[in-house]
Structures are given as C-alpha cells and as structure tokens.
Image 1 (cartoon, one colour):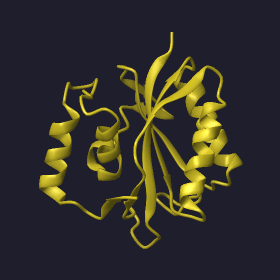
Image 2 (cartoon, helix red, strand yellow):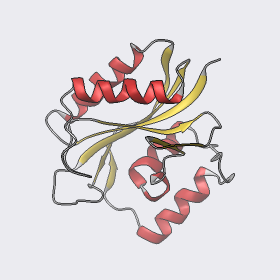
Image 3 (cartoon, helix red, strand yellow):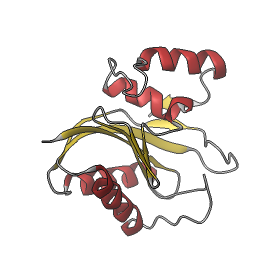
Length: 164
C-alpha cells in the first residue's frame, strides 16, 4: 500500500532552483513513487549556522510504496549523486532532502526520526508544508499545522521567508 509522505527540499549552493528541480525529477524516478503536490519555492534565511547564503526551500507530498528506511536511503543517494557533502552540520549544501512525515507513522530509528524532530521550529518547513496540506495533523500528538505555525510566528516573527 502506498503511503503519503512529506519531504522537505532545500538548497543554498549553485543554481538553487535548478537543484530542487533536479531532485524532484530524481524522486519521481524512485520505484513506486510519484509527486502528488508541490509547494511554492521559498527564499529563507539559513537555520543553525547563519553565516552562509540564503536557501531556497520547498515541501512536496509524495505517494510511495517504499518503506521508510528504503526511502531514506534513496533520498541520501540522490543527495550524494547531486554532490552533497556532509562535512558540516547545518552547513551549505547543494541539496538537502528530509523526510518530514511518513503517513500517520511515528518512527524512531537511529537514522530516521518521524515526525522530523526539528520541523516544528522551522518556518522554512512549516510554511510550505501548510501550503501543501492546510489541514495536516501531526501523528504524534494530534497538533494541527495551523496552530503550530501560528505559535512559531508569534514567538519568532516572519524571519525572512519569502515566496519566490
């Protein structure tokens, strides 16, 4: 049975928008996988280590027959083939592909935590995720995306996130 999965995409090196397009195309080539919906592209300030170029971010909804760890492995292979190097935490990257949600599952593997543990703190995830599914409910605690987004905006304001 195919699962609904949300993936965060980001790039802040090279031709950022083209990098996201290449990654989306490679995701559609994965076995039993298709993109159902894509958010707009967003120009966002870096998170974590801020002394680097701005990112272009996006969230896509896919349907996939792949199991969570198989999908993770395939996404990491896409990152590597596109030139991603994991030298520095929160450093510059040509492409970043994160599994945000995997169906209604709560997963706790050493290499994969779902829901993504930092997604509720990141406007560059929450804004495009709400665009893709405004009625989304988090599987771990039943929180609604709208409420989480309002809370983060109230706490942090609209920190440099702009639709491209």
